[in-house]
Image 1: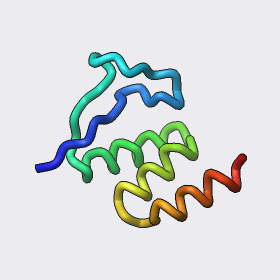
Image 2 (image 1 turned 120 degrees about the vertical axis):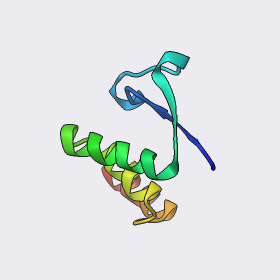
Image 3 (image 1 turned 30 degrees about the vertical axis):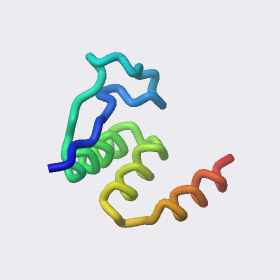
Image 4 (image 1 turned 45 degrees about the horizontal axis):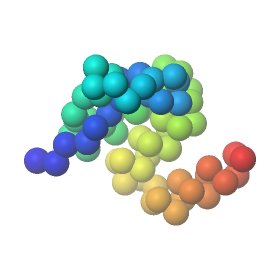
Length: 70
């Protein structure tokens, strides 16, 4: 089973790359973690991560959304 590295405190919220801030999750768990973070904090980064990890949008769509917000 493929595991993804996930920042407990996301980098866009001030989290670090320290090992104590990183856990391994399945793709499904990783998508769910970002969905929950999005629902709590309403950060666009988490919405895009959730939708991308859950295959609801493509990488190209994510990049287009990022470009729109710049």
